Image 1 (cartoon, helix red, strand yellow):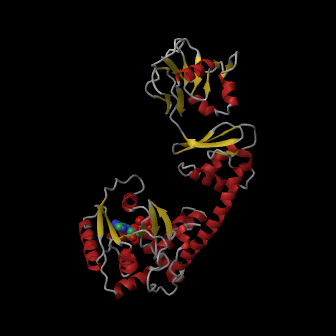
Image 2 (image 1 turned 180 degrees about the horizontal axis):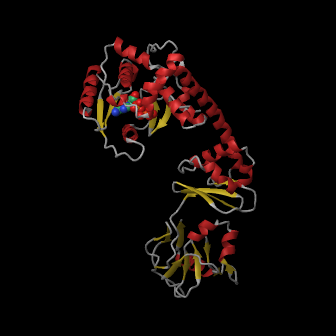
Image 3 (image 1 turned 90 degrees about the vertical axis):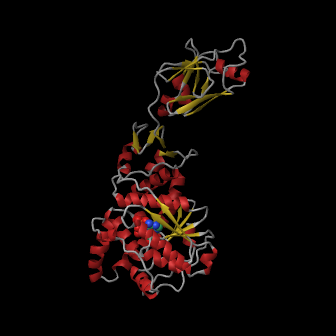
Amino acid sequence: MNKGEAVNRPEPSTSGALPAALPAPSCEGPMLVGYSGGLDSTVLLHLLAQSDQMRRRGLRALHVHHGLHADADEWARHCIDLCRELDVPIDVVRVAVAGDTGDGLEAAARDARHAAFAECLGEGAILALAHHRDDQAETFLLRALRASGPDGLGAMRAWRRFGRGWMWRPLLELPRQALLAHARAHGLRWIEDPSNADDAHDRNFLRNKVMPLLQARWPHAGAAFAQAAGLQREASALLEEMDAQALAMVRTVDPRCLHVASLAALPAPRRARVLRRWVAETGLPPLPARAIAELAPLLAAGPNPRGEFAWSGAAIRRWRGLLYAGLRPPPPDTAPRYWDGRAALHWSGGELSLTPPGPAGEPRDAITPRFVVRSRQGGERITLPGRRHSHALKHVLQDLGVPPWSRERLPLLFDPEGELLAAGDLVLSARFDAWSRNTGRRLSWRG
Ligand SMILES: Nc1ncnc2c1ncn2[C@@H]1O[C@H](COP(=O)(O)OP(=O)(O)OP(=O)(O)O)[C@@H](O)[C@H]1O
């Protein structure tokens, strides 16, 4: 269970009244409030500042100064003033917002803000943000407009892991109207950010145009969307439990591999979820939407369909009944190189090294330390330890279960006369094996 789901949450408020006090989070960390100076975070700060328990936790405010608006300095001063009145320490962090990288300046500012939040959040600390029920309803609608499934339609969670600590949204079940009433009742002052009126932003358009229209006919629209989001979160949690079980059934001992036949036997929607979960667990970038359709040929029946699905520097490939997921390395090196074994050799994005390094202390019949390193060209043969005759390297690598794309990248080590001594550190010749034992040297390849 997500840790956040175990903690107290505010009772859903149908009347819109604020709870007498905010729920106490069960996490023990220090409390940091993301304080923009706007209505929502002013109310959150005011509520938290009334709690002795929060003060004992070392309650602080954090204002991110984006430096984008002419009044930004004034906003920061306003935040400092209010914090002084409430006797809450505040940090003002200036961020450099990267120019519009394609998703708009708002998105770039948000990225910079979140990076600053993550940096300021110590181990186990809690970042409280003032998202409320109307924000939740908008997020639900925005996700629906992106055709999200239950995971996305679940919108925001009250708790989630964030940086080294947690993100907490204690106001998520309260409508903005309740926050406004609280602010007025306590004479709070806040900043109106003029960009909130700009309907060019999707969220503002929903907030300023669509929601008032919907609420004119269905006054409960905001509450209903937020409740629908909650139901999606429940459904998503159930699905995730089943995904985990299904993934366990198609796994191999190697976390980077799945059994194709078992995966193909799953119903298509489950298969899609299992693939996404597997990719997330391997730490690769999330699969794009097109992935599921484009992976279908790789899962098709047949002994060994070729090809790969590549995205954001990662790839999924099939070989011998297994799917492999991994980062897509740079193209393999092809030009031969001389190597004396002293410093590690950078090869095809990996590293070949000899420990202890260097050529000192060779026995008389030593292999010259002037190795030639090159990639496979086909037809190479190697005499393995304990064998009198040579074997085709291709068969040796196949027997070891080395997939074709890894074979291409393996550095082959030759002596100057052209005798194959090693393929990465996976295959050693009888002569190289004896030399490395005699000299106490170990060849290692990190590809
Ligand atoms: N400049 C800021 N400095 C500190 N905290 C901020 C700042 N701007 C926003 N926050 C915090 O983040 C909360 C949400 O802000 P906002 O509605 O702009 O959402 P967001 O960060 O863009 O996230 P989302 O897109 O998920 O809604 C605010 O209620 C406040 O707690």
